[in-house]
Length: 473
Image 1 (cartoon, rainbow, N blue to C red):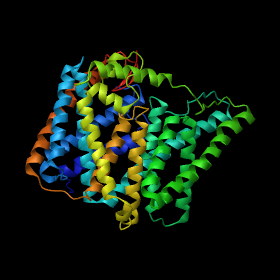
Image 2 (tube, rainbow, N blue to C red; image 1 turned 180 degrees about the vertical axis):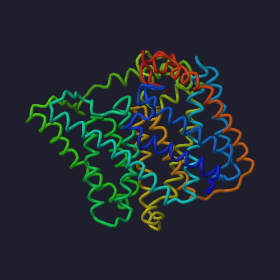
Image 3 (cartoon, rainbow, N blue to C red; image 1 turned 45 degrees about the horizontal axis):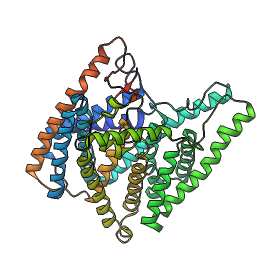
Image 4 (cartoon, one colour; image 1 turned 135 degrees about the vertical axis):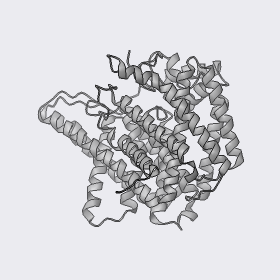
């Protein structure tokens, strides 16, 4: 009889949960509505919590099998101070339990990043291919759903006002986050993989063109500007080395735009279709300005510890987050915590560019060379997009963000891990605290939805819309 070790079983469950949230949850509402959820957002959040919980459990039970990435003492002390500030901020918030939800969730996602890093250490080629295939599976499944809806709408003249064809997300901008986090990695096969036939490459080119069509359909100015910022920054840093990656994107975006014009402007006008699309040529920004003004006022009133994690939703009656990652951290976590986070991020970029410069990358393999460029592009593109949207808020975006962070950490350390018994013991104990806190802080809403006649979550904050759950008034 074949015996499977508990470690292998838990690793399989973690990988299965990751595949479900990355590949299936954008297109399929995995958890039946009759059980607990009513929206894609809530379903994705539950799967995210399951994934994070399994990763934390892995860190608690199998800590002896793990080794750590070597980090400086200064960085460890900065993280200790950040944890302390986050705890104090949560305790001072209007609803400490709900503030703890997001604080513990980010701590759990950090364990996910470290877990991805350890998988990279075990077999980096296998991990990269699995991640790329997971992203591609999700994209292809989503495009089948989207274009079947398009054909149905145009053929039968079904009323599909913009943006009805985009399903699976609480808002179109959440879909744009999903696109931007995976946009770099899905180009890796064309740049670094060897295919047995030329047809595979052709199919990938066609799929990427139609993926860009959907981005134009979503009419996101912020996503396109963030992509332009990421592309320009990558070109300035990596120059000729980045040109193959940039050239492919420019080709696909150009053809994709013409395909978008044909599919969503010319064809509907010729056949008199009821299908309607929007436009990126809009000049209204009053919604963002109002949110940012409120954020500045909250920062002024609560400069040290902020109003508490996730608590912008308690102070604004319409939108649950300020659509700006830096302002969100400042107003919710406080200025000292934000300073530590931005300092760590800035120092990380400095170390990355110092190690992975034009000279050093020339000595790397084709896969490693392109991976370094793509990871840099992905991070700065989404950092730019986070300044105008809730990139650090939505469950799927959070998982993809910490996956990329884990890859960058592992790539920087080249998979090198060190034995650190005391750090491992602390990490194990802290993982236990985070797991217990996360379960305690999220279970009330989960049980409420599971046992209530109306299958919906109700956190109780003022704003309508998604933050932890898809709050419906």
